[in-house]
Image (cartoon, rainbow, N blue to C red; front, side, top):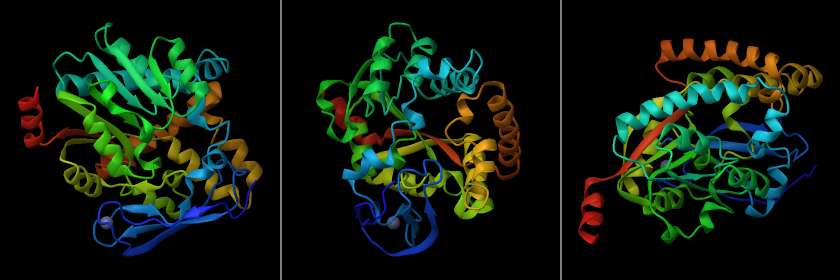
Length: 337
Ligand SMILES: [Zn+2]
């Protein structure tokens, strides 16, 4: 475990200002062997964006993303934990949600999908089976192990950071990313690069935490969405819409999706300081998704809580955002092709 890891100061990537109110001071409890440093989340007083300030320096990525980081898990390692696991069950619901979304927001033929931070190809597999079988499925992933697993299932996946990806190599009808934009150093660059990958009529679909969800107010500094120190920017509908507008994009739809893992991470955080063994036993932040029937039951209970909160508040701690280029941008692309 490291102490005093290298950090950099941050400012609001929407306003380019540092006029903030402190929100929460949090340490890494999910992977406690990374660093025992405490980090502060602040909220921009103008646009309401929440960000980590200071945040880990880019040179510390190997420290804050350990080898057992959950997003690096491959389908093979999860499957080895049993025939029935959380991932295989959640995949059925996710496929239905995405198919329904695409039929509404992109009813035309999708020939190419690009998934930023595609992991082992979990979503690319879904797109392959949900869309026409001939769809070209591509992506970029920072874990070589996960990228290799995705390639073995027929996807074109490069290992690296999206920031370094050359966008003139392909065009996509759908640019997708699930829980990535909150991890990057420059969300504006992320959206601009996503836009430059789009074909005429293409759409961007982004999943990211909603910092305005009721769960953050209930759990406070123990909220699962902090995911410290790996979440650097946390949006709400207002701030993501403002950033999109600045990038020549517009948010056309936001769906609030349940995120039951935030209950596991939140309760683990609540117990972590005084009852760490209980926290690890009952709310294992890394293993819950792989723990077969017991994990499915635990997460099913939290799913019911999430659905109830969504019914009451009409919101959750997770947004699925559909973004399109503004009409002017579409006209410009049309003129040039
Ligand atoms: Zn701001």
